[in-house]
Length: 171
Image 1 (cartoon, helix red, strand yellow):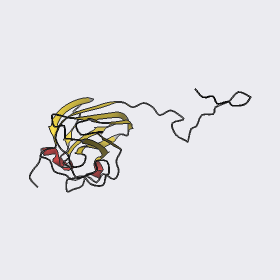
Image 2 (cartoon, helix red, strand yellow; image 1 turned 90 degrees about the vertical axis):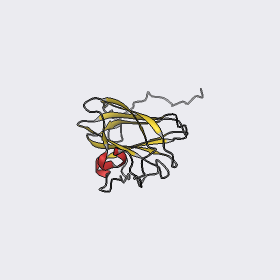
Image 3 (cartoon, helix red, strand yellow; image 1 turned 180 degrees about the vertical axis):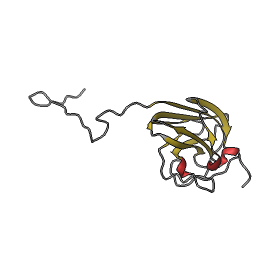
């Protein structure tokens, strides 16, 4: 394949945030190659670009990719640990932490991970069904909200009901 953009391989993923907590950038998958494998999220072979960032504590991560003038681009966002990056420059995405796709070509895709663990992460901008194109990528990190004590089955709350029959009424 012809050489693509500098961040066409996960081994050369473009760093995000550079000391800040928000960033916006403009790029295109148009000249990129396809190196991702192992995911149904993007459904099809399409050019992809790689970005990386590190968190030192749990964070709320949000990414939105909005297609530019090319209304045929149907973007997908995939988030995985950097360890998924292979020596060939492609990422095996069987251990996704998050995935989001656009509803229709030309629509944005938004990925939110409310409690992203500390670590180094790989964000992939991919295309669905073989699509590619120019886009704006907006990313942000904010303080993760604590998980409530009853956020999973290990800490259920007890609900005490008043004596008497339970009645269900249609509204």
